[in-house]
Image (cartoon, rainbow over all chains, first blue to last red; front, top):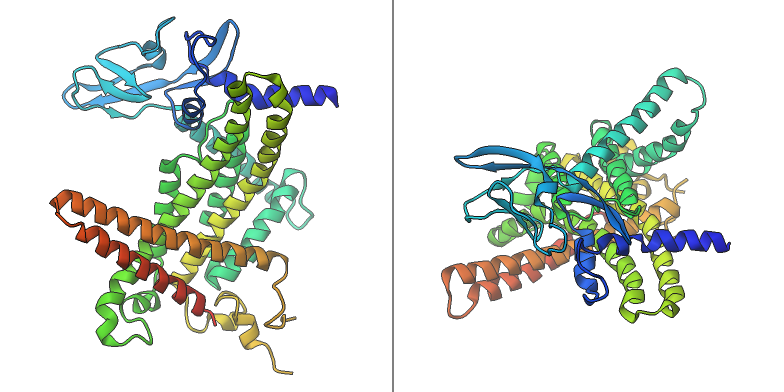
Length: 355
Length: 77
């Protein structure tokens, strides 16, 4: 038990050590929790794993910069890292990092296509997802007609859950076309939420660009699969007098954009908030400069960390479910409830035989 | 077997309902937030003396949020 606690202590406090800046003597500089937390949940041009008393363990990632007129330049981000004892990053080839933003020294425009920490994590988790689900798919080929085996039996439950409880109920008889997207979204968010909780990893789903991309994909798929009923509800809402339509149409049009927008904000806010809370609890030790605070902040930190494990699958589920509902609203036909699928929660009751 | 309309929905349906209604809450927030932001941006862009864009779009946002909420709540009944 004691050993377990010691291990947990080491793991939970890793993010704090990892965030101490290179070359700054920690004792003279006042501990700034806000800066530490924002640095930790943000993106960066190098992958800082952790630091010890006598060194930092950092992987330097490639920088790919495009400047109009000068073309593409590619080099390691080690060249822009702060020199020993300096707070500001170094300059290289007319480029420097200003608060993790790539800028030119003369102020001319530069477009940053670097493999940042988040991009590297995205590539890594995509490979992981591909490997895991290739194994699962292969399992269905080799175990055809038999019970699932190994990792396949773990994921089958979730895949069937997404199909039966999310896709069939929300989309209706046309659910099969959308299964690849729904499953990808669910497992992508879940895997990356979990990976984001591991020490030293990137905070991918807490990055608004990632959630924006997924929300835009949902919007495109919803619009591309919409039928005439969907647009009829927007431009001629049933039961609304014609005189009110000029007000109703903009309100309905706002609704189209706001639905994916709320998906983007929700995932980003939930994951970011979770990370900030955990880091804040651990920062308490360093703010009070006392080991006596450690048991309390550690207990709370561990509690939130375990809660985040639940949040990571819950947020993946909610994103997938709401995506399915928005798609369902776009492909809905009037007679869908007859298939005992889709048509909302009231469908079963409406068609139940009367006793 | 169909559940009686009044009884609470079982397991996964409860989670589903939770997700759905929390989604509506987030939509309200997003509508009001987006329209307010647009109003502030328009007022800044046109240098209006009285922030009519902000006021108007904020009120429109509140109205739109209420309308969306009522519509999504009554749609299924």
